[in-house]
Image (cartoon, rainbow over all chains, first blue to last red; front, top):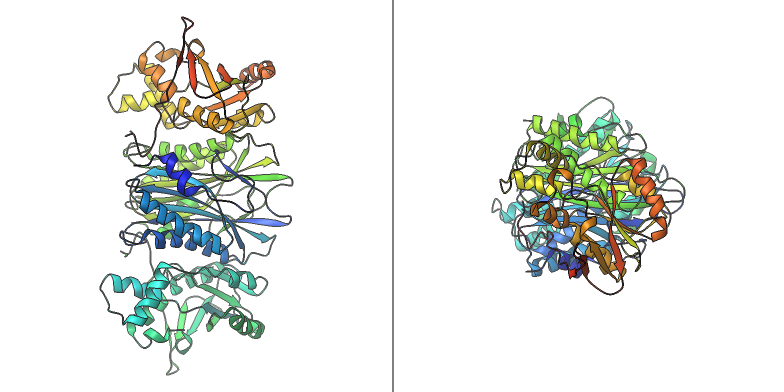
Length: 319
Length: 319
């Protein structure tokens, strides 16, 4: 059995590229580039609440970093540093090595230095805190949407939730769809390049972690307005199209970490070009309206209210 | 039962004083003062490992902030911001309110803005990440001790460990000692003013969280030297003096969060004056020597090796 300090030494001390002092002292040291604001977010993942207890450690490591980095992307900022605190029931060297590999791989993919953390014993719990930089005043908040703005979503959200339902044997996915859905669940891709490209373009933005409708509600609340979505514009993935479960997962499933953003209508050409440049679908799914609430325009021309059914850690049960 | 968003709204959204954007978006925004480095540390506290499950929530809130702030003090930096992620088995409003009060009180005592966090469901786990500022290059690391330096410790460490042993009914403390020991356990005081005053004075420093001997070992390892302590100089608190348990707690008990530091002998007058100014005992307990290992000079003039018996999360069992 490895000791705590052995664990830290062998798996958690990684090379840093833009950090003054990394793992090994009471704290890490870093500096911001001139004119930059620091962007800080923290996310905790708990076995049984955020992931199935038998999730592969490498996938879990990737995901722990990815969901945190996604919050920096959602501010239109550049992810730069991350810390990881984790509690483990036992010190299983092989598990820790694989977890650390996945975590470090995601960090490296997005240019993030892993600068420190804490290792302790307890029920499996993973808590990362991530730091980004953004030019002073250029972060995109949730509060800037205005009536008339388009509402956009990246990618094809819902796949991760379908993957989870497949694992829980609530639905059965055909092979090709299953592969896409499990990849979305296990290896989410924070939309860092998209977020950065939307500085000065998006009026409001967040990453969808608890479900599109519920998270859209946060923008509406903080921007004091409502939304009308268009059924026909929802980007259901072709592999799972036309199922009720897919629509439900798209609207209320979490865990895809796509970016939901609003932008003035004059930005359409820029955003359409950006989708091609990034090879990432960007779908205009509705518009911001005055008033309150979210509505949907169905293909028959009927406008109906649409209530979120997204995840709340103290109300729902998931997975 | 409160929902996650209600919990955050009612207890975790506090006024910030030097933060650009606090709780409520995907991330918080802040900026450093000119010429400053950011100092980052994270600590995770788990029920049953770091604290007894029935610990009063207000005390636990204080302690969660304090142990983190202590790491910033140990770098000779000024604590400025903190995030808190926590997982809770149920959403007990009263518990959360009391916990948040204790956490916020500690933050306020040390001028720290509580800027964000995450709330989730799971076994009780508290993870804070704390941020400080220090003038570029002025942080005191673990690696700067040199042979001949004095070794100093603040306060009278060991009280917290004795308090825990009393709670576990391993020892019985008389009333007055019990009060002092439980206060040390429940309401540790990060030595922020001391840490700041030691910039440019201490050659190496850390906060004692796992035990004086074990933590001294980190300085020795990183500074490539050894230490000789002096039995007669160990600051055993007068309320628990002359017991074997008190000496053991002083040398190997964690959780007091006193600062252990080294300094050139020429700094003695400054440090003695500082102790008076801060009304905090600062005891010169030994010296750094060339070579490896820790030794102790006993009152009979005998020098013996001294092995740490401090806490390792994957080797010992505590509490």
